[in-house]
Structure formats: C-alpha cells, structure tokens
Length: 112
Length: 113
Image (cartoon, rainbow over all chains, first blue to last red):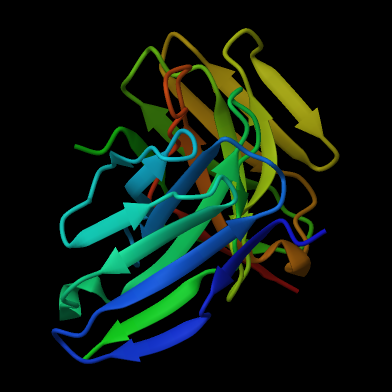
C-alpha cells in the first residue's frame, strides 16, 4: 500500500529553469494538496484540488501552476524557478470528510 | 495573517518528563484540530486529532486539551521518550470545499536521555 508517492525526492534547478513535481495517491481520495515547508513557517498551502479536473489557489500560489487530469495524480509546475522557491514540497491527499490527510515523503528543491 | 499560532518554537525535555505544545486559532468556523508528527526526511503523519465538541482526547501517552472559549488547544506528551524527538505541527480545518488544513509554524522537540 503505497499511499502518497512524490517524485522526484531531490532536485537542483538553475534560476529560470522549469520542472514538474508529480504526486500520485492510491487511496481514491477526492482532495489533493501541495504544500511548501520552510523553516519557522510551517506548511503553507500552494494549490489544491477538490476532484479530477479541478484546481484552486491556496495561500502562496504565485510562481506555481498545477493540473489534475487524473484523480490519482496531482502535478505541481514551476515555469521559471527562482531562489525563493527553494523549499521542501509536500503533497497530501484526503477524503471529502474532515479526517486524516496523508502526506508524501517530500521533494527537496534547491534553486541556485 | 497566521490563522494558527504555535508555541514554543523549540522544546527540550528530559526523558520521562512532560512535553507541552500550545496552539491558538482565530477562525471560530474551524471544526477539526489535528496534530502531526514529522521526523527528519519524512512527511508529516497524523498523531492525534480532536473536534470541538469534546475538551480532551487521549491516545496512549498523547493527549489533546481543547478550550473552545479561549480558542486554544494543546498537545501533552506524557513520559516523553527520545523516540518522540521530532517536529510537531498543530493544524485546523473547517467543513468547506477542500477542507484545507491550516498549519502552525511547528515545534522542534528534543527529548534528552
């Protein structure tokens, strides 16, 4: 039972490069989320999705785009990476009722 | 604005002692209050959660105390062990489209043996 799987686990980008982070969940959850974690700031919501084909902005959406073409996958894109996007990114999924959110292992991204 | 405020930022406790982490929230519409535990290099994992219709919930050595009128809730870890050393996050969500979790800034707990 894989739960929530994120790829890649580590990545180094040069300023201006683009990349896509992939999140896959096998629990048939409707809701999926992308968070970023920075020291002393907890986890901040970037974008989220309430179902296949839907996306919505979270607290810190600027510089990121997302897509949810299939229910089990949620992609986070950086079109033109900036050093301020150096962070650890977590994907999570959840049922529609307010219960446990399951997190992936994280992607550590460094933008130089 | 920070909707969930967590303190302290870091905490050192002796083995066998009690660890206490506090959180305060602003939005009275929040109706689900979980605590997540995160070990280095791992994603957060649910530790224990409470809803506002109860004032306390206990699971093993972990207890959440909830004060609705004060808009505060806290995590108590009894008989703290070195294996409890981790980062702890409080969070809150409300019954709404997306059920988005809002997190506190986190507390780094170190239990000294």
